[in-house]
Length: 263
Image 1 (cartoon, rainbow, N blue to C red):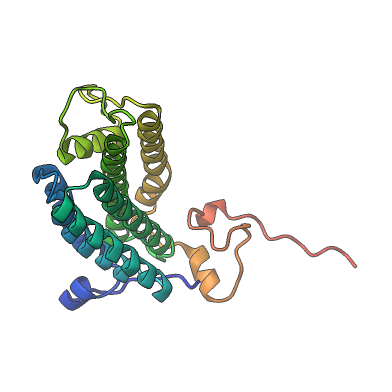
Image 2: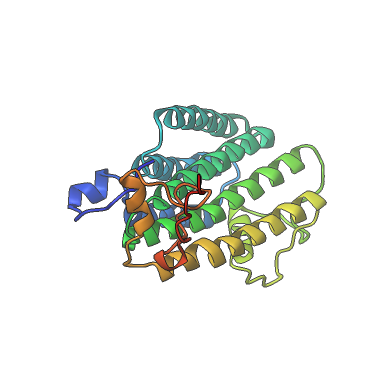
């Protein structure tokens, strides 16, 4: 794939164009607030899916996702909406779990699309940094939806509560647990109970820290700089790395050119 260079942005570019990660950041904050502040076991799924769906569509569009990815996301979104509507009608926990699992899948797809996009930016700009922050928030929202889905499914099948503390627990509790785990704050007022719950909570803590200390830290050091190896790729010159292109490589790290073997 060719490297991406962001030029001067107009208001139209920011709202409808690609690489509009500041706009997406604002939408993700709204998603977080809706999950945290709106607690309704019956209507919660449908109310939460509407703003998240908008963020997913914006995230995939602004990242230049392939048409097949967009079609798959639309199909998953349709299943999530139908499941959330069915939950409103029947108040069925199993159906509610399906809705939140579908939302988690959509959030994961969006995070991967954004990550693939920002790693091909020729210059590390403010939009690149906001793209990385968006992925970080998406990880937290992904695990929030996953926690809620597991909790609903476990309750429907009598597999034990997700949280060790006595309930009932609303969606805000799982969002809170997700983000204090992601940021490794860990107040300890909410803790996972079952083996499955503990496993996914630990997985989130690992992913959050790995993301921060690798990608975000590297992008901060490259902020405002041009990554010349992407220019070389644009000119048809393959970088010396086994990965083409290598988004984490600076000029100083470039391997010396190898001499062809003597005939």
